[in-house]
Image (cartoon, rainbow, N blue to C red; front, top):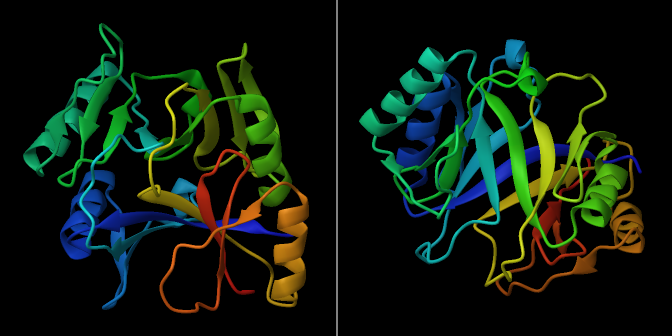
Length: 243
C-alpha cells in the first residue's frame, strides 16, 4: 500500500507550551506555529521523517496514553542528563508500577508518559527518539496491519511481547507494538497520521486502508478533508489528503 507515516499527533491543552517542552528536550525546532497546531521537526541528521504535531483540545488527560515515545541514550551519563533536562523543563517522574527497571518513566507537562531508555544496541543511530510504542492486546497482527499501510517491515520480535517495525532506510525511530492487556478507554490523545503520495486518489486509498483491516471512526465535529479511521484494535489514526 502506497501510504507513509507523516505525523505523530498529540492533543494538548496548551500546544505552544507542550511543543516548546519537546523541542527543547529533543533539540529539535518549532517548524509550524498556527492557531490550529504547532509542529516540531527533527533535524535531517536524525533520520526522522515525521513531525510532532500538537493540536488544541478542551478535554483534559484522564488515563494512561496507549501510544508513547521512548527516548534513546548513548550512555548511562547521557540517560541521566536527559532525565534531568526533562525535569528542569517541567516534566515529572511517573510510577506506573514498573518497579526496578533500567529505563526511567517520565511525563511531560501535560501528563503524557514517555521513557528515557538506557543505552541499547537496537537504537544506535535512531536519533533522539528510539521508538514510538503502541500498546497492543495482540502485537503480531497489529504490527502486520501497520507494516502494510506504512511499508515498514518487521525487524524485531521479542517472543509474543513485542514486535518492532523500522523504516526501510534503517534510520529514525522504530514503531513498536508492546503487549498490554489494559482496555482502551476513550479517544487516544496521541495518534499517527499517514498520507498517500501527491498523485493518489484519496477515496481510493481510504478504501484500501479499510480493506486492510481499518474501520471508519465518527468523532463528531465538522467535515474534514482527511478521514479518521481506527486500526484493528481501535486506535484512531488519520489518512491525510495526498501530498
